[in-house]
Image 1: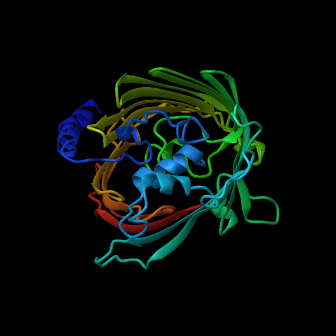
Image 2: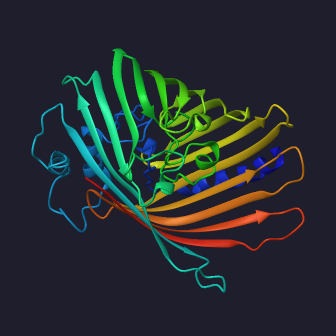
Image 3: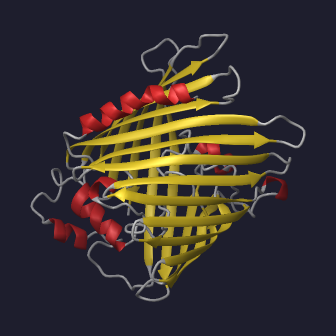
Length: 394
């Protein structure tokens, strides 16, 4: 495993050096713009979920293109019109938002094994944040989503007789200047949060689109340090045997401006007495006012009461390069090995694509992903996926 990891170091170094010649905006962390913490733009201090007023204004004033729309308007005026109803001021206790994300997938395009294009409605969500005071030291957050089938909510569960589910509902409170708590149902705090829930550092670890749990999060952030403690009891909406309790610990530290390193640990135990311990190291690097590189590597240990321990490992990295405001090039690399203690199957994925924000509230992605399975016995053919994605945010 160490030899494999070291083999990627020259590649990652070359990426950093190459990307340092142009401006980059990281998505979603924006560390290249000087925003190392997620609470600046999100109601949830660990990231994900709805944007606060500042996050909406930042998207309108610094991320979205002005070429196709609003080319004569100032960034300040665009920021002022970034609310749910544009420039109309809503009561401080009412912050709604809507999100839609659709994906078109084509497997092995141009090849003999071409499959028909498939369209997935990945996200149809309503978010509501209700601050109890103007300082927002106490607020309630709610995320309701719809799915096309009950199976699409797995491992979560829809409400009885409907295709609606809750992905988040929690109470957030600020106890001191540097200390917050979150209580309710939410995502686990672990590793780097990014929108690809099928990536090796999300789905494989039980951090997918519908893997939320009922939990408590204690969050401390001061100066160059950020710490989370996240005990959870599992998803109480599903059957007891599917409820997986455990906890996570997550810490990040700013080495210097726009250079953050961190460590995550997660332990949980399922109904068949399989105990899993996962340790991850992460890096977020911003360069020259906009460049960025995200990197995460981890090891997962799983052992049952009557089985031998299995140690699996993964590597995930992503870099984003800006051509012009609102148009970005993105590349990614993933590696996974199911058992590092013996000769076993390894999986590699490489992706390149374009990420565009043609105007405020709209995001468009197109990407190609190559997958390779390295089997000790059989040589499998590489797979190719062509994907396009539309994201609307109001």
